[in-house]
Image 1 (cartoon, rainbow, N blue to C red):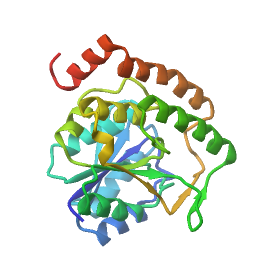
Image 2: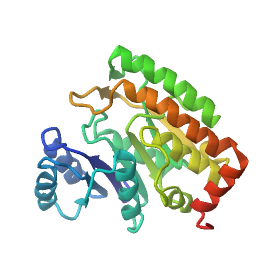
Image 3: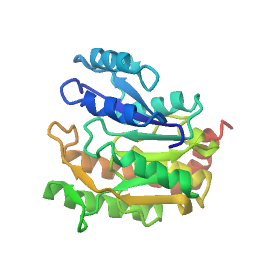
Length: 257
C-alpha cells in the first residue's frame, strides 16, 4: 500500500469508537495512517483520541476543533491537514465502522494499480455481500441517490456511504480549499466541485460494492435529514447550473476571488 491516510470525523464517539480495530489496522499495514478529527465533542472523545495516539503516534494522530462544526467541516479540515503531508491516498471513513476497515486495503489496491482517482464505497445487496440496512433508510437512500445521480449527471449508485478514498491531486486540494455550502449532502457537493474543476473527472471514479456494511446503533442520521438533504440539493443545483453562481464558485475554488 502506498502511504495512505484516512480521516475519521468524531463527535461524541467515546463509547462507540472501536479503538482496538484502528490499532490493529495500523499495526497490520505500516503504510496506513489515521487522522481523527475531534469535532468539538462534549464527552470524553478527546481523551480517548489522546490515548489512542499514544499507542502508535507514527500512524495514529488527531486534531481537535474548538467547537462542533459538523461532519462536512470536520472532514474538510482533516483533508486540509493531510494534504500538507506526503500521502499518496487520502480518504474519509465513518467512526462507527459501519464499513469495516478491511475494505481500505481493497480500495487502495484499486488506486495504486489502476488509473482510478477515487474509490467510492457502494452498499449494494448482492449475493456474497452482507449489507444490513434498515428498510426505511434503504428506500429513502435509493430515492436520494437517484436524485444525486440526476443532479450530477453521472451514474453513481451510492453517494452517501461514509467510506471514500481519493488519489492525491491538485484538484483535490482545490476541492477542499473552501468550506462546503451544505451540511448533510457535502459528499454530493464535493463530487460537484471535482466535476466543475474537471468535467471529465468522473471517468476515473470507481464504485466498489463493499462486502460488508451494517447500521450501527447511535447513528446521528435521522430520517428528517433526508428532507434537509433535498433542500440542500437546490443549493448544489444553483452551483452547477446557474452560470453566474457557478462562475464565482469555481473562481473561489481556484483562488481567483
